[in-house]
Image (tube, rainbow, N blue to C red; front, side):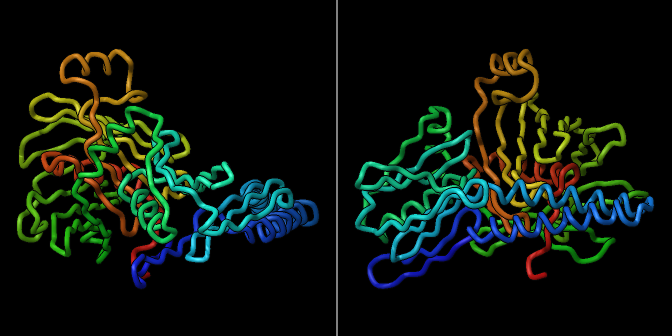
Length: 363
C-alpha cells in the first residue's frame, strides 16, 4: 500500500490510498468492450454455450462499469498530498495540497473502522478513502505524515465504544501471520511470528472425501514439536466441532452472509463464558479482510435475548483482538495474552468456513 524511509530528521512517506484515477477510463472502456462482446455472442451465435459465456461477459462488464463510475483516492508524498474524486467517470477533479496548507491530521472513525482526516488551513477537511480495522496501522500513517509535514496530530473519534477500544488496542501486542502451502497432504499452514520468533501455527486441510479440518498447536514451536492442542472438524450440517485432545469441547456456531463477505462465530470456553468473532471484507474474494474477536457478544451479533443474557452474566462485550491486512501476510493485535489461543481458534474456523481467495507470498 505504501512505503516510508528515514531521510534526515523526518520520515519520508510515499503512499497511495483508494482507486487510481486512471481506473475510471480503462474501467469504462473495458466494461463497454465486455458488454459489446457478450451481446454479440448472444445475438450472432445463438448457441446455448454462447448464452452462458455472453451472459457472463455482460455481467462482468456491468460490474466493471459500476466500480469505475465513482473513483476516489489520495496520494501522500513529501511534496504534498494529491486528492481526487470522480463521479460518472468525468465529473469531478483533482487537487494538490502543499504541506504549508495543511493545518493538522486527525484520527477519525467510520462504521467501526479508523480513518485519516486532513484539516486544511482554509477550513476544509478531507477524509482519505482508506479505512483500517487496526488502530496501530491508522496511527502509523497519521504520525509519520504529521512528522513529515511538520503539523499536529490528534483524534476525532465520535464513537465512544470505538474510542475505548482504541485506547486498549494501542497498547496491544502485535503478531504477524503468513500462510504457507507445501503439499496436499500437509495442507495449508498459518505461521504466527513475533520479532521473527515462531508463535504457534494452525494447519488447515480442505478436502471433499477426508472432510475439512484444522489442527492448532498448543505452543510456539508449532505442530511438529508440540502436536495439536485443538482439532476442528467442519460439519456437513453446518458449524464446527472442536476437540481438546480427546475431549469433545463443543461447537463453534457459524453464521455467514450470502455474499461471503461477512462471517460470524460464537462459542463458549470451559468456564462457560461466551466468545465471538466477526470476519468482514469489502471485496468479493475476501482479500484483504479484517476480524474482530470479542469476549462476549457485541451489538448486532446473535439474538438480542442472548446478548442481554450474556451481558448480565459476564458484562458488556469487550474487544480483545483485531486481525487485519492482506490474506497472504496479515497482522494480529492482541490486547490480552490470555486470548491468544482463541485468536488461533477463530482464524482456523474462518479458514475452514470463509477462506480468502489469495496468492501465497512469493507467488
